[in-house]
Image (cartoon, rainbow, N blue to C red):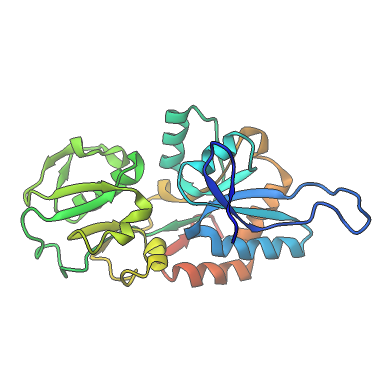
Length: 270
């Protein structure tokens, strides 16, 4: 598969393309462009196929990092993206000066704490190396998991905004290292415990994604993955139609089950 580059916005891979010119040679409307990352791509590919059956042409673009999908959206290289929850979006808008908005909800995934070396938190030795995400939002989610596990205590009320500076008690003197979230699944051979995303663990094939010592649950609506667009696109009929296909197509639901097993729930009312 050939990769293309949007100058200044990272590398991307076209997953599905639609012809812009019909048999008559007359240009048709440009396809809707949706950006995503590898973990969310397979069910979206099915949604693209289902949308085409309803006359909607969609081009799915896969990015290899978590920065380019928003910068490309802000620069109008794509029409929407699907890979981030609300805290991540809020942080991106604040730090990069974007004005991106959540359009409709997608799914919410479990995040867990995984270990190849230990079967319980009690077995973790003093000074154990623990890996969490290095971005401001997902790192806070990892710290909340460590607190839920009883391994650390955080500043009261800090929630998903927690940083290493919010650790008020660390009785096992854990060495907490921060890595890119997409690399956490591959860190399990090098650390004693790691925050993990089942969909990335499934792709990396490093451990059984269901084997987390603890999951954070799916009752935190702020972590629902959102379809995100610029304000001028949030009411676009093509985008809303595609989202409706994603949410309600039986074929897409099967693809979600195949991709995520039981470690997800729909974030919309069915």
